Length: 426
Image 1 (cartoon, helix red, strand yellow):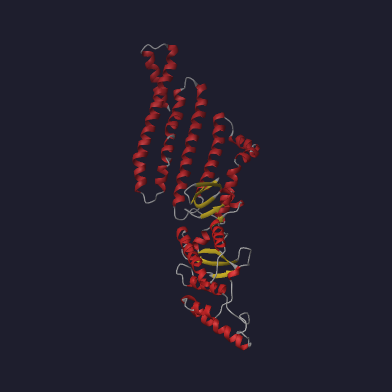
Image 2: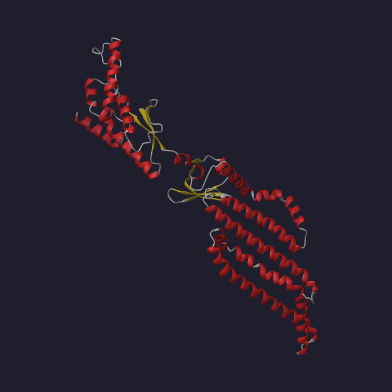
């Protein structure tokens, strides 16, 4: 410090020697010292930035870890370098303004405030870079790292703002924190979404309810697609039409949400759909019908074994099957059709045979007898799954008539025109 004071005295003596007005000497000396101080601060800042850009960046690229690369990308080292000129100014300020001591306390507050501000920016960049690093790592890439990163940044800036305001105003930081406690109700209202989002993020993480890449459906918000981002207040879902839905994070805890991860990780995707058989086309089968159905390879063995079983039963109970078709046990076309569909599923390589596979008859309604297919497609991708399901029901719709069955549909205008045309011919 003595050297700096000697330099200031040298400038004052030099001004007096060149004939400067004695009343203006102190002001001129301060102006010259301010210019020199700013030049030194600027030069050191420039050299520091060049060192960071040319040396630190190259070293970061050569290291094995990508962690320092993210810190460089987010400007952590550059923002940390902004502290250098402020430290220079705060060091030289007492000498520069030695003739105006009343300004020094204000300058100390300003430089201290700038130091705190630049440190906060550096910490913000550090948290952002760390969040990006952990968010893309294999271990944490499916975790809501962005939520914790955003919460950390909010807390950093909130606490930093309190300390900064206290330092600039010359107050004790404890007083600022006391005022914060008094204003907690207002802060809770302002940061309600952030607080709810943070709590929801913890629940989602601890309970493993949602991960990046999960296929989710949130009917309330019209979201149906893959999760592409989880942050403190919102979850972004890329829908199948490539639109982006933004859903509040806490909605994944409070509202109805379907996560399809379990299906994707399982051995198949469920097919559960029914066709409705017209009740008036259901009938008992005679020998001619059975002879015709025996030609269908998938159910040939079923027809044979079932026919023997029924014949043995009727013979054992001495049933007169010749006088009426109603007597005794007989097969029906709808029952044979049901077993045909099941055999078709069992022989379909795109149906997972290790999971539940059945064809069942549901309660008859005014629109017919629902024949429901319940099985699991071995292909789980959306396009492949829809292809498997469509091919399956294409076949079912096409073969129903071969079993003398009609499937229900609401009559169209062409049906009525055909009816009128046939009636007129009669």
